[in-house]
Image 1 (cartoon, helix red, strand yellow):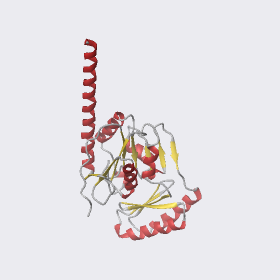
Image 2 (cartoon, helix red, strand yellow):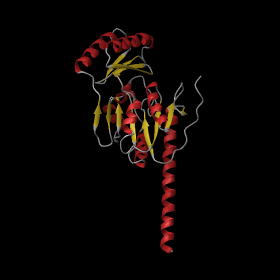
Image 3 (cartoon, helix red, strand yellow):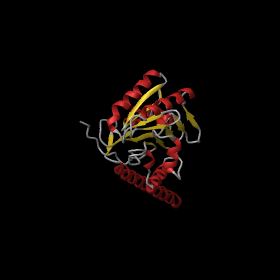
Length: 268
């Protein structure tokens, strides 16, 4: 039975935010192309980023191209494909790639195998592959066995199970490592990290954040290393709105106090 976790508090201080996308900022859909982040939520993310000197990143299994499209018109630091590709605050890209011949071979073998499992879908990501079976759950074991077999044959690969998907990705790549890399760089360095995610892929992020006394938030049910929980994507949106309002109020009170002190100093 999953541990009962409290709703996360409204935070203050110097913060660095890391958000998963599918199942966290956006509802999971039957097909990845159907997913979107509501415009008001994108605006909240931009406000939250501005309040924290740009220390807000999207950390997802999706590619950075997809993440930019979903975040339009805003552009945030990103970790795509679970961190195999990463863009820092200065727009510099950091990419971990597989050998081109291995990518070509895997693509062919996976496409041929999944073609025999109607309803499954192969999503190539350049340096990784996602094997989806949301529309064909009866093939779950066959898809997992296929991915496990290929990972065992190629030491460069690692498996990453998720919700109705399993991914083949470069070994050593995970969201926790991506978050750790951001935390070594400005503007994230020295801030309290906050990681929000819903899936098995996010547990590595929770682990990294917990290790530095950050705030880890699990979305939905299930066992987790996270310290706090939000029940749904809708609750994430509501918490985000409350958090932004809370930080705006704090800033307003701080400004009013400072102006009051300055006025008193001038009169003295």
